[in-house]
Length: 447
Image (cartoon, rainbow, N blue to C red; front, side, top):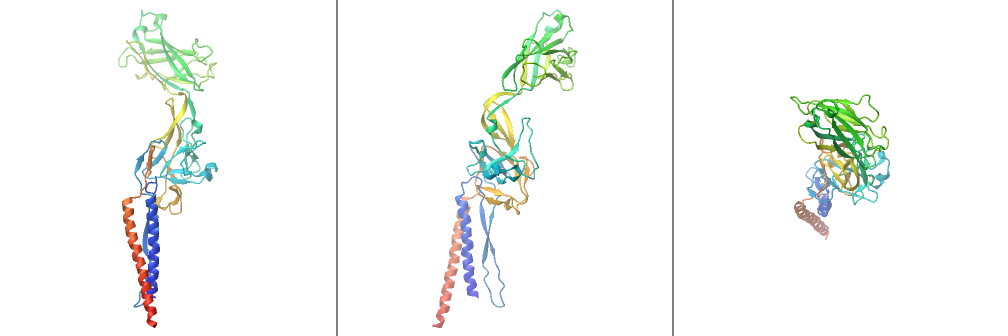
C-alpha cells in the first residue's frame, strides 16, 4: 500500500505542477495584454487515513485563483477613448448579442480597461467585440438612469447620432457700462447699441441688438435709460420687439448700479419682461414674434442689490461683459471622458455636449468574478451582485481617458516560479522513477 501510494503521490505531483506551469505560461504570454489579471496556482495537501504503524501518501491538489483586484499600471495613449478605471471598479460592456437584445436581456460583462473605437454604425467597441455601455444624457444635461443594482438602464454607446450638433442660445449675460454724462440734464441726444450674435433653433447665426437711450434729452429723469430690443431675424428687424426702463443710483453705497427696472405698461406679447427676483429680462421667442425660429432668450442684467451687470459711470460706452450660451452647427471631431464618467462629444466649433455617463461597477468579491474572453468578467455566485456607482464616488475609482491599464503580470516573479516549478516537476518525476525501481526489485525477489 505504501509503495502504491508513493506512486500515486508522484503522479499527482506531476499533475499539479503541470497546472502551475500552465498558469505561468498564460501569465507570461499575456504580460503585454492590457487589463490582463494574473492567475496563480496554490497547492493543498490531501491526507489519507493511515493505520497503526503504516503511512499512506495522500498527495496534493491544485487550485487556481485569478487576482482580479490586482491593478496593473496605467499607460498613457493617444486615443481619447482608451478608457481605464483608476482605482477599484469595472466598466460595463456587452457583447454582439447584447447589442441587439432588449434592455433587460443584454449580457453584462465587466472590464477594467478597453481600447474603444467607433464601428461602422457608431458604436464604441473594442477589437474583441466588447461594446461600451452607459446611461444616456438628454439635451438638457439630465442623466437618464434606471436602478443602480441592475444593468437594465444601460445602453450601448453610439456616437453616430451626434455627428452634427447645434445648441440654440437661451441666455445672454448683458455686461455693459453706460456713460453717466449722457444721462444728465443738458446732455446731447445720444443712443448706444450692442449687437449680440445668437444661434437660433436651426444653428443659424442671428443678431439681437440692444439699444440704450437716455431719457434726459426727451424730458425724462436723470440716470434713467430706455432699453429697446431688436431682432434682425424678425419680419420687422427695424422695429423694436419692445422696451423697458432702467434707473441707476448716483449715491453711496452703490453708485452706478441699477436701482429699478420698469417694464412696459401695459406690456405687449413681444415686450421684454424683467423679473426682479432673478435679474433676468425675458425676450419672447417665435410664439410672440413673427419670422423667428428661436425660443425665449433671457438677458441677465442683474439685481437691484448693488451687483447689477449693467452699470452707469462716467466712462465710455463699453459692452465688455457680454457672454452667451449656444453654438452653431458643428461636426463631431472627438469623444472624451472625464474622471466623473461623463462622456462628451467634442465638435469643431468648440462646443462640447455630454452624451452618456459611464458608471463604474462594483461587486463585493471581485476575485470571485468568472473570467471570460477579452479580459472581461461575469458576475457569479462567488462575486456577489453588481452595483453601479458614479465614477469617483463610494468605493470605486475615477475614469481615465487616453489611458490603458497594463497587465498585472510580473515577468521576474513568473520566471522565478518557472524555475521552481521545473525543479518540482523533475523531483516528482524522480519519485515515479524510484518507485518503479523499487517495484522492479520487489518483482526480482521471486527469482
